[in-house]
Image 1 (tube, rainbow, N blue to C red):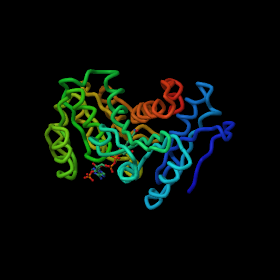
Image 2 (tube, rainbow, N blue to C red):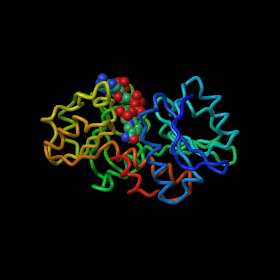
Image 3 (cartoon, rainbow, N blue to C red):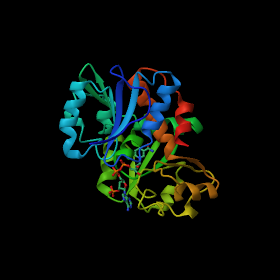
Image 4 (spheres, rainbow, N blue to C red):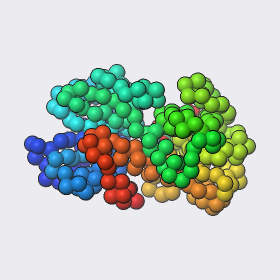
Length: 278
Ligand SMILES: NC(=O)c1ccc[n+]([C@@H]2O[C@H](COP(=O)([O-])OP(=O)(O)OC[C@H]3O[C@@H](n4cnc5c(N)ncnc54)[C@H](OP(=O)(O)O)[C@@H]3O)[C@@H](O)[C@H]2O)c1
């Protein structure tokens, strides 16, 4: 196990939260959560670490979380599904989405939540109402399932476009909506909102984009869940076409502020946490 420690004054009274993944060294979550603890003057009571945990370590790791009383565990790739059988309870929304990105330990009882859908819903609702809008959802993995929940909760019209048709159909079966191939660009063009949850744009595919630029118009809202050090090609080209864009870091922020509240039972200091991601 490898971990990244922050420099607060921890003691035996410190409550530990962490993000686990493999890899995890790139994670911005420790900066974001620790900045929130500092903002509230609770950095000696709470600390947030990043731990690299391999898939095969998950059962033993979660036993340890439960027994030593680690308060919160944020799960990133590849752990969002694999942790589920080892938890005591799963929140109904996480069950519906089929993935857990947040584990809360209440007196040795582990409950799994999903806050990724909030990371989709909040930034979108901040600039438009989803209700009645047609949403082209690109991809059909875990992030797409969270997005499908967010969109259908707000009564948007969902079209799921994916390279593997069966996975798109499975989301349509669970959440409603229609399916189309990922390269059905005319269908994407007719949508009001485009959400990319494919890994196109993510290293090592950072030079790729799921939609040729000419299909994006100034009337689109383009939300790219992918984030990296540089702006993705999709968002760069969408801006060049005059579209409104939402960065993947906004998703990271809002799934993180919801976790902050679950771990600390306090409203998250959103602006301070946002600054750490810029
Ligand atoms: N901003 C945030 O806070 C946040 C949170 C969660 C996820 N994300 C990002 O969202 C993305 C998806 O994450 P995930 O957990 O949903 O991953 P996932 O479950 O592995 O799904 C990956 C998706 O990408 C598609 N894909 C992969 N390679 C492709 C290619 N060469 N051409 C076309 N489609 C391709 C897959 O299609 P097939 O079904 O055909 O394989 C699948 O739909 C990642 O970039 C992740 O970093 C961001």
